[in-house]
Length: 258
Image (cartoon, rainbow, N blue to C red; front, side, top):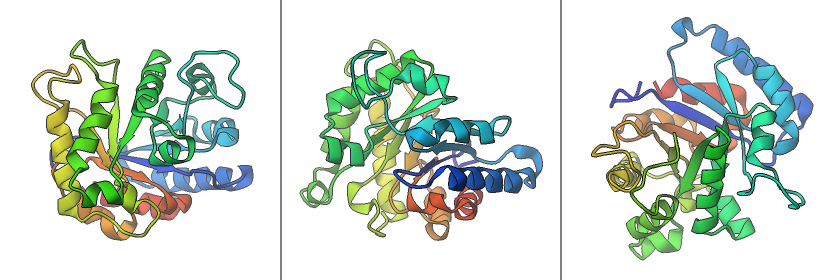
């Protein structure tokens, strides 16, 4: 459990890594290690493989407590969209989650805030929990724009007060800390997470408290820094990139998360 009492959530984003045999071995190692954890009351875990790996990973993790998600989805339910994947196809492949608006998608594919919002809505329509990524660049942080960027990105997903589309999770991923080896200090992460939790009140249709919303930190998370970050009251877990490619390092981050 996190300091707030919310159950921690740790997500592995494999990005464009691993082949089928490697992915299967990863899943078996994690399952074997988790069997040795008494009680099964630790953090929740989600794995986000690349699309070709999804069916195999879903098979390997079937019956375990580890859930599976897609790294992206198209906002349309079906249609002539070559190279894209729909929410229905993700659900059919065994997914329960969808990653929306990762900074690398925003950077490499020019995804706008509005497109990310449509993708999150599409995930909800197909029973997938959207893990919505927000975060500022180094230039935006230096310019003192961190909070204005986060507010713009969140308000795009929740433009009105008519109520949210279903369960969701936010991941704060400062772009300047992704894949750079530079990690936000626990205090910096907590400042952003506290702002996001306050921002959600009233604009996400969740009433006068966002205490039940999970907020993850993503940005060069390792077993070495996970415990200090987890100790912050508004950090509820992690979106892990490079360190998630080693199942034992990922498990160490899970253990450090409570």
